[in-house]
Image (cartoon, rainbow, N blue to C red; front, side):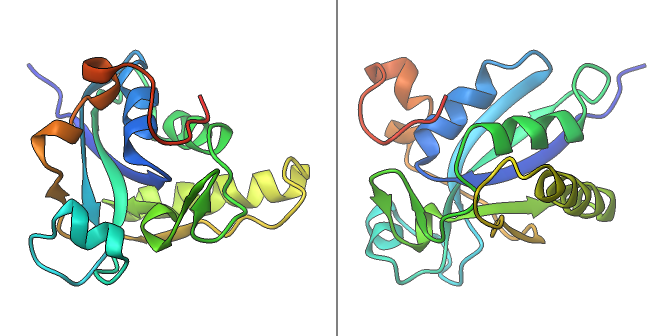
Length: 162
């Protein structure tokens, strides 16, 4: 009997760094970078970077919940980017770099809200968490040269918080 894998989708700045982070976690089976949360169908990297599509650079993760939980993925997400800055991560600026969680189930939505609530009480961050929590929408895979970018090109490019 094979257990069903689950999906998680996170946006936390440049998708290269976010993908690299999650692709190296035990229990993450597959990652893909792409665009989600916008209105343009089939957007290109150039369109998303122009800031007119509403999409975020995001990572879609397939994970084995018997090895790593969604809550653990959430904690990893929050530890590795700044969820307090709107439309920015490091030197990357624009709505495509916003902090967002695109949930796939109601349980994921509830867990995301719960984790944020817990983090807010710890005063871990000096400013309020502004991460968007929204239902997952169509995920458009980014162009092939963006997939596993750091594995192909080394750790150069966007700001990375890993």
